[in-house]
Length: 327
Image (cartoon, rainbow, N blue to C red; front, top):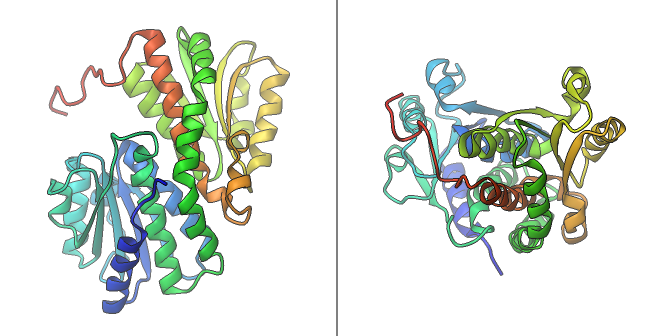
């Protein structure tokens, strides 16, 4: 069974709570890491009755630092390689304000860990489940903060969910390869791809657009919340216009369903990655399943992106500017 170290998470939060009162939690990152922080922010914003919860792109945090940042704030930062300059700077900004910093990264001893009070080193390469560790650890931190600061009646159900989601996501990703190949065949020549979702997966749609499509495939792309679809974006819907819908199995499913009905009505080229098809709420309690959608969507659509890269003969690792120029 694939798992993350929930005891480490519990010990980190207990150590902080023993020293200070937590009033504010800020999630700070850039690009895909910023998106991977969002499910935790979404959970904590919805489930907490007391905490101020915010989510920042790192340089906005640096240049327009919130007035409430201080000793009663926990800043959770993330960067895969641990060297993203804006996020490294955000750690120093947080420390200067006497906030407690927890950094989540794949690289032990990286720059991101230098100003951190606590560091969590996550996996990545092993398989699709490993690629979810960053998102999983940050969500677990949010759950544990809520439990230790004010109590959470669904805590045991969330912990049970953590014990199941990684294997479910890995198995789902493996099962998705056939449909991913079909997607690649249909979308490999698309001039633009629009991506949408809702709930905690809203920023999975965002990272799919800016990272997997724009950064890694050089495909023009846009993303939006399914709930915003009828407030502008639906005007571009027409026959064969390419859309991807990451459909939730949980509280926001009706929002996604409404958008899907409209896409079908006008014969848009539509690909749906539906968490319900992969058994999310069959494996994880319906009371909390909605918070695990982002992990499943991330694992499955990674397979779609890989197949698209093969069909287009454009590896996901190729860049035009990133890491090659000063910017």
